[in-house]
Image (cartoon, rainbow, N blue to C red; front, side, top):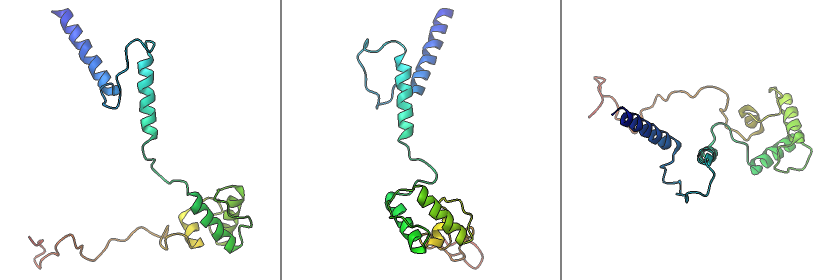
Length: 154
């Protein structure tokens, strides 16, 4: 009886581990036995997990597209900070032009894109980096206005 309990516990643990590694995932195709050396299963499932992570959308600020970089370079050239030909690549001459522009407009001369620099170039939001968004004082069209007693309409 004790031996069967140990086998059952081992089997349950193995199934939980396999499920956690995604071995029963529908995206994993069955491979004929004997084609891979022992121990390669853990490596391949680890590799699959890494590649699926890389397909996820990255959070945070994304690099500007070449079209956006060209637009920024044109704005810097119009200001006189950028003297090169717009290439769509954020290179050292573009970063240097951004530093000149930032310094000339009282911004921190980092040479990096930020909301205030884009705003100053005329390419950003007019309220970017100014203050937190304010709460609206107008009633939403999605909710009923409160009645005089302060209770919502039903």
